[in-house]
Length: 254
Ligand code: PGA
Image (cartoon, rainbow, N blue to C red):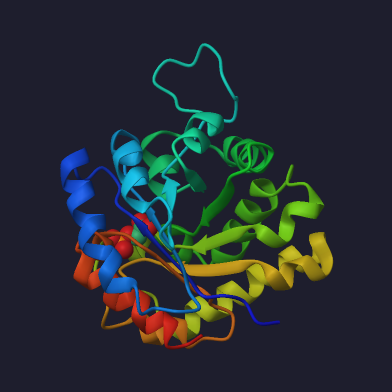
């Protein structure tokens, strides 16, 4: 099945509202020639409203980096799906390894967020991936299988095909040490297989991204793999020229 390539930029805790607006203002003309690729930027919460106004009506979509699973309530400091939707978000990153590690998010939390995102008309980008310790212990498959299973535990089957999964080995994030295309393709194939067991043919429509030290230089290695449909880009998404180069390379594969 032909899946539309997908490139998302995760800005993490970078850029004020003004800096974010400058970045997307520079990005839009650079990605204008990129056809047949879905493009998403995920600024910090504080820049979503400003960036959303710049992106309105453009082909670049807006995503958030996290959300709470409840629509509203006594959760000081948290942000909910309807609040994100109201700002123009259509995607939300869920279960990023930095959330799991620094904020103690569990697989169950992640599963609740995935289900809540769909209930609130946002498409979740579910992040999974093993640590270096888990990899060295030969536990990659066990860990990623569990994250996929619990992350999609409450996912309504009719929504499954819209899901986006990002395979991000933790040891490759922000380290300059990307996985090989072959290895990322192998794990992505396993992820699709596990999704197929649960959701049947809908798994063929799921976009599976690679994330971890993706650059304009190595994107081809991932975008060229049959099981990989694009990338979740951190550091290299902060510069509009670099991010646009990644988008254009992925579009060339369409
Ligand atoms: P990186 O981050 O591209 O800076 O390695 C990827 C991510 O955390 O999504």
